[in-house]
Structure formats: C-alpha cells, structure tokens
Length: 76
Image (cartoon, rainbow, N blue to C red; front, side, top):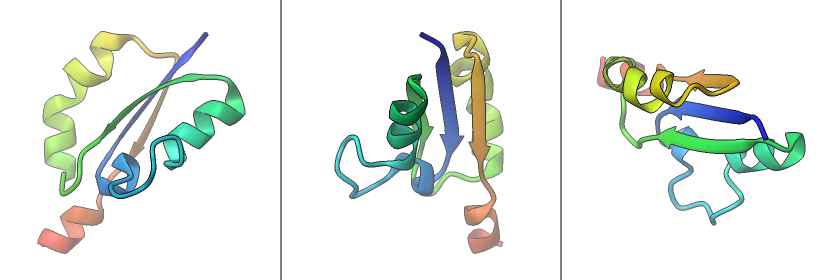
C-alpha cells in the first residue's frame, strides 16, 4: 500500500477531532492509502521546514500533502 504524509498545523493534526475523522484519515480511507499525520498544532512553515527531512523525506512516501501558513499569518 502506498503512503501519504500530511504535513501541517492543527488543521492537519485534527486536534479535538475523533480518531479516524480527521481529513488526513478520511483521505487515506477514500484512496486506500497508509497515512502518516505530521500535523502539529501551532506549527509555522519554519517549523514544518525544520522537521521536513525526518518526518517526510526519510519515510520515502509516495505522496506528500503540505498545508501551512495559517499560524504564520496568526503570529505575524
């Protein structure tokens, strides 16, 4: 099975959303993919960049989805 890594902030992490109901989980189920959710609440694009190699590149996924920038706007 192919792997999808989702990198992002709380919108990706799915804080306070039941397990299996986050958008990365639903995409994985719909497309029959293994999903690694690398969303961290409050993260910025600088934080995502700093953890990109170990959390994405090193895992060699077939697909990567990056959703960032919300907290960059929030924190100025």
